[in-house]
Length: 125
Image (cartoon, rainbow, N blue to C red; front, side, top):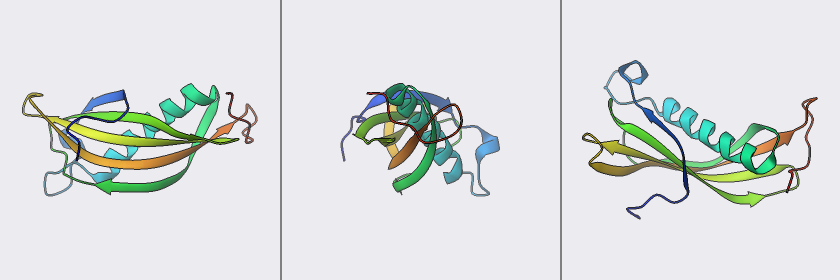
């Protein structure tokens, strides 16, 4: 596994106690949500339109996120279709007051571009 993130830093957020499960780890759903937000930002930048998530094509949890970690989410466009954008997303945790960086999750998300009426539209290339 690479020690460097793949893609562009899209969002950064601190994991807080309210986002934990009973074991004290951050909920996987919270991490997935942050990845979806970052992927949506990347897809909007490419499509120049509103987008919605249509698929989480693959997602792997590699390591837990702990309270106080800074979750950094990186995005890279891997496919542009007629109406869709697929984004490779990596989440990395900055731990121990930012001195340690560890990849915690990776996945591929697909977004569809929508027009002002909520109908599929062509991705603006």
